[in-house]
Length: 314
Image (tube, rainbow, N blue to C red; front, side):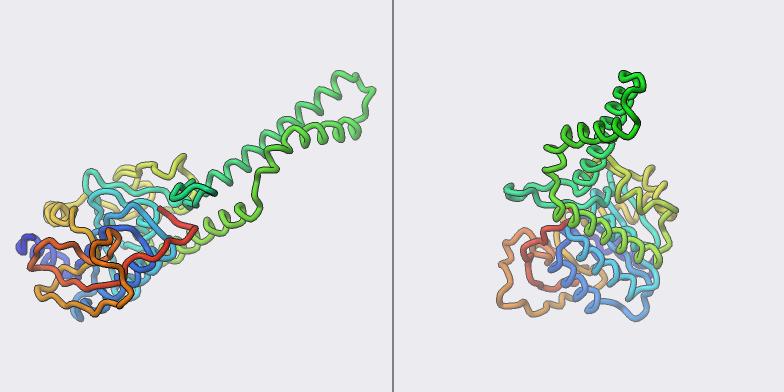
């Protein structure tokens, strides 16, 4: 890694600079806190986080975000490629955002494991939208049956009787569909959406970087979980979001293939003791930096991933 590029960014911003490239999990979040606590300088009041992630756990994203907000007066997040779902929660904590040309955020709709399908996930909004669609269709059926009965009977059937018959017909018609709705899963989905909203509100209260109504737009305003929120659209959501300058682009390019969590400000490595029950270094989800050589990185060891929660943003 070019020390000159790193020095340019540090000189311009007077900041502690961190890299986070990987899934957002509890273990990564705890390790991130250890890295920040071990490397935070007394003189720097600003943190810059280069972030690349496909998403992960909302609780872990909140821990990472609160770590930065509690230890620094100003948080800057720089995104070079994808920063999806739980990564977007972290972005909400930033006072300023910088995006490269191919950078993208994603919606905050909760991802849930599908029953009887290993590793398969579906959007939590599918459940809510399915319920909403069923409600709308059932009402339209009731309305159709009711009006047909009233008109075709030419007044011989009373309004009360027509409504009762229409209600029974509509209920029987959609009973097989509504019977498939799991109230427990529905509750889990709503609770997960409420958690994402609560985290977003708390983080936005500190960063003050969301336009009015933007949080609910992120939670339920997009047609798919993979929807691409590029720089132009991000400007409709965030108040302070800009394209990267040359120094950010150069540093971001160097960090693209550097997996793991580490601080860039120190020239001396400072290894922390690794728990005995940690996964091996070969684990692709290990939050530590990869084996690439660098003279400008301070890194530490950490535990690998535990099994992810059933409720996940990613």
